Image (cartoon, one colour):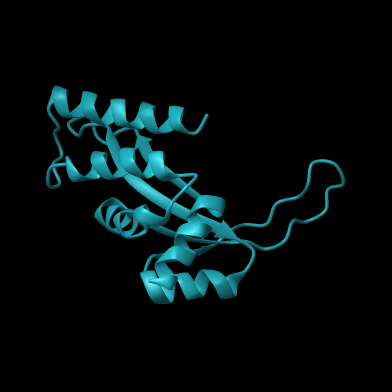
Length: 141
């Protein structure tokens, strides 16, 4: 239980809950939407701890330079979940979320209503996904 509460605190402070939208690669495939939860930080030790306890995929971020002095930023790492795995994670931590509780509600509702993988979505399903995408973006303002 403490691990879940600890992760909820990290998600409240460091995570991004989003619905990723991209154009179709082929004309006969619908626009794609997918739920994503990402935690990015400089502490690889913490990122690895999160992955060890909650799964996810770790990415090493490319270092960029600061705009003012041109110095290299510290190395950062991301652990991410997408689709159903992101929804499962949010459902576990939801009781402990404070700042991102509303975003989690939108994300969970979105994912639970998604049908199994389909390449051609109905107009109603595309509208539902676009609405959830916009609601989640507005919740961040």
